[in-house]
Amino acid sequence: MVKPKARRGQPERRPRRSATQKAKAKNVPDTDTANVPLEKRIGEVLKQLRLEANLTLADLSVGARTSSAMLSRIENGMAMASLDTLERLCLALGIDLSDLFKRIDRNKGTAQLVKKTEQMEVVRVGTKYGYTYRLLSYDKGPKKLFDPFFVEMDKKTQSYPRFSHPGTEFIYVLQGRVEYRFGEHTYLLEPGDAFTFSGNVVHGPERLLDDQARFLSIIMYND
Image (cartoon, rainbow, N blue to C red; front, side, top):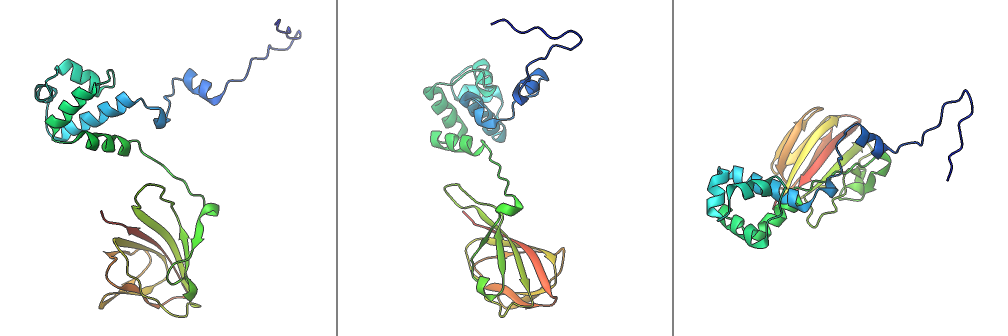
């Protein structure tokens, strides 16, 4: 196909480059970690485990019956270790092969942005008493690790329910003063205060001292 000639006095138009092409042209590294090769992820985890165990390349290579040069190539993602070699490396590091792959999965890393308009109001104990809860993160993993909430309450709150749940709770006060009960004790929470406590002990607001209170509540579930 013959390209049309540019008109006299006008510069020749060049095809637009995509953002990816521009990044490559500027030697900007690809930040999509999902495309990191398996051998590189295995190598990174093996190196982490070796350093945590205070072993040198020579130490681990002797224990795993492989050469230091090959181990270095594996750790740098330049070579894929055989299953037999991985089993010997795991044995020398004192872990199971399944533990190695679990750690590889954990090292993938995840990120989640929940825009303000996407934060769901959820029904929890206390909602019908004048509380408003907005869930700030949606855990999609096989095991729930934590629940973060933005909580609002005001003078319309009719009563103060009590809570009890597994794990540890962390509260950071953004606005308003609240007397907060934990077991047999009452604490005064003011803006800027941080309060951490065991969730299995009965707890909850005792009295609202200002017209409105807002705080972050993060429930962390223990293993």
